[in-house]
Length: 397
Ligand SMILES: *Cc1c(COP(=O)(O)O)cnc(C)c1O
Image 1 (cartoon, protein in one colour):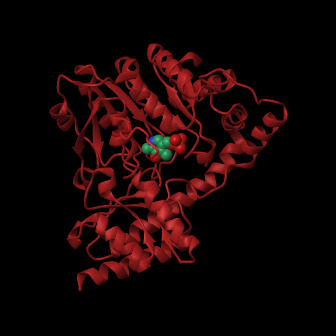
Image 2 (cartoon, helix red, strand yellow):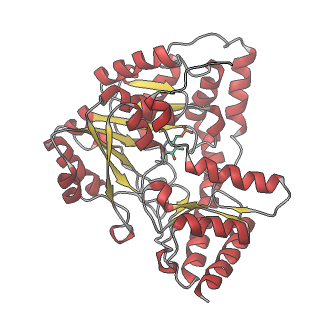
């Protein structure tokens, strides 16, 4: 008999697999089996990375940029990130505050690891991005959820925040524009939340991954610009994946006060070291070759905006469905609670009968909704909504 230890760690036993990646994988498997699937499950832009970004990375690879780089990133890239925060938000920072990590997801995890210990509590407004609770658990801390439903525009209020704080609360996680709801907080709304966080001496992890994907004239806010007190406690996460259609490159960024940045760099130095060196030159080109980047991004943003409006209008025509017109990211989060079906069952029957893939709201901590990504073609959106409408009609019979 072969014997081996039989109990995996509490970390391994407590982790839940990503439900969004699971729905996406099931949709792709059906597609591969020849089914005509309309997928609203994607968590990434359907565009390719702009050519000049690829070219810069290829040139760096050919020029031998194939060795380790400094753990927090190549100096010109960190400098360019500082310059873009200055240009976009008027924020004064230094390259030592910047850490480039293998994907914004890892930037989030390191930010949590640098600030949270076992016994601490972390406030996460729901609906939330699926990875936050798991990352908090992996730090040994405890996630505390506060539900913010569609009547509240999916936004946390200062009163709700104050009520959720205990002596153990260490960190508040904010994500605007939001995945999964697309909600964008105004500067005033964020300032009111930061006031509460400052009063209770919390750290803030602000995931600003979708800052450049905003519509209807909505403005993203960089939390660190709200006040010196905000800046002193905020870990700002951003990256290249969503803005520049670079999800597979795995490059994210953190901007944090110096002591936190130093801690994050040390954690990263023992876990992954630097982001793949030649890809960092592609990221540098995205920031430096501004005209080319802008020319590539304008049509992407226009396409997202058009699809957003179309999908929103079509969803609200379906009896029993109601959907807010979100102003950011590439998701809508319609309410389907009127059908009296658990959202998980709604989604699995929708996929089985109509071959439409959507992620249930409960995956994001909010039962009774669907997350629909419009990072897919106009044709798939049109066909998918027609099928969704037929499915909803069948439930009302
Ligand atoms: C996609 C995403 C990230 C991380 O993106 P990476 O692909 O890891 O760079 C972080 N936060 C949110 C809310 C996201 O949707």
